[in-house]
Image 1: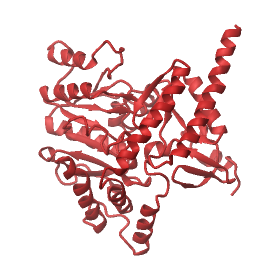
Image 2 (image 1 turned 135 degrees about the horizontal axis):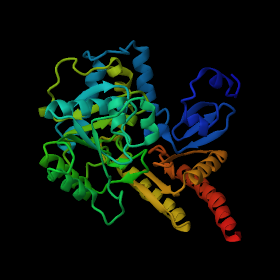
Image 3 (image 1 turned 135 degrees about the vertical axis):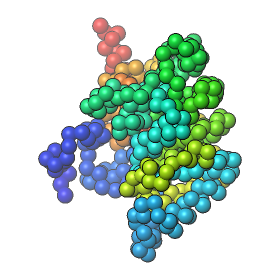
Image 4 (image 1 turned 180 degrees about the horizontal axis):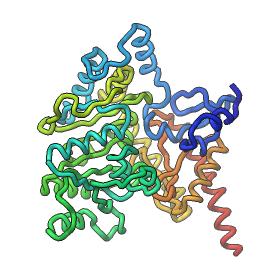
Length: 426
């Protein structure tokens, strides 16, 4: 195989995106390192857009999957009972739900986060008998029509080819600046019979907006949103697809906030090693589905059940891993905070889901391009792609994390120092 793009240009759709920022042929990966076809090493600060929180090819997950495959374990089971699914369910119940005193049913929806969100929205409408869903500015929930209707990004919505209905857009926390409480604003509009918002079936919110610019909601704001949902008979849906599985330092991004959502969606790193896997967690009283009323062919990915179980058993049986993630998150905040302060910019995000708002998409893109030249894979985020976004594996060694952050620091210097000098000269 040659290290060219000719095959991709000839055969693959132009819809591809990440390869445009990282035009490299890759072959192997381990933990936080990706190897190019030519042998060059790259530090991975993208991590499959947070689908590889535990790094590439974790050896324990890898070994369990190989053993399962070579023992002729069931690969695909639809929603039939299999040993792999049973083992995952038991692990999830004992390691995740019971220690957190959480009472949810697990619904296997299909392979992607969009599948989980579609199921959540459909169920909320079924439970309440209403159709309106309240979602927020800069939210991203998926690319299928129901999830896309709840997504704010105009470019993504434009690909639908049809009107996207059934959603009222409300301002996320901080959308109008720090002095405007957007939760109070939403409550006032819902309380007002002339406020113009139809009674909602659900309020759908990301605790940290991954694609929308790393906007992190405060515990106080989220608690207000939960109170509003209960007051108006709506289900609270927390989209934890990108912020969950340890990204903010806890398994669920809000588990320290005292929230009790009706529905939680998960995907991304749920399988542990990048295999397609999504869940919709729902309160038992909302489990009113008729058999096969919502299904999907690939909701029975037993390979993902195997690796997801190992991930739970390896990383979440005690607080060791979570404490390590929190420590790295504090280190990341310190390093990025110093860079941001130097250029009078601001930090965004929480935990190991953090970035710098450059306030200019072209500047952020140039910084990420400089990083790639120096062997670091990193992407942008935000409505104008203005945030340089760090999503490295949570298992990254501190020395490698610092090496990647050194590259980011140099890239900011190369781009912004030259801009400052050019502006001074003018």
